Image (cartoon, rainbow, N blue to C red; front, side):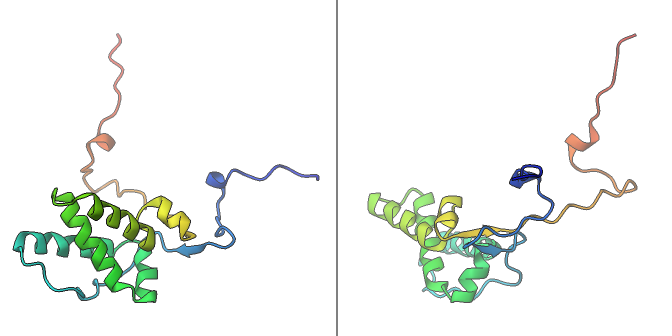
Amino acid sequence: MSGPPPKDPSQRRRRNPTPGFKLLPHEGRRGAPPPWPLLVHPDPRLAELEEAKWAELWLLPQAVEWDRMRDYGTVALYVRVFVEASMGMADTKLLAEARQLDTKIGVSPKAMRDLRWETDEPLPEPDPDPEQPVNDLRRRVRAVDTTP
């Protein structure tokens, strides 16, 4: 075969989806999360954490597929189990359930790969306006040569 070897996937300008994979938008799902489908947790503190996690998950790229499949109940169960596990309220059965739910809804990178989902490339960030103040300290600091 003649010609140059193919570029490494990380160096390509345009990245087509891997054959057989569903391409999800890197920017995630837009809009408000769907209504919470389960009963509100009786502990107000846990209910608040569930609400925050629910809103956070519905911004992910995977949420586009959850919405398309109307998989609200499974995602809500994941949220409930995740919150209880993160508060130290989980036994081994609950932790196993969390892993199984993750596999079903594709939250982790491995679960996404197993579901044959991948995200497209992120949009390039615009160059910062030189007139705007820079809030990121790492971008404000520059090396200065102090040798005489």
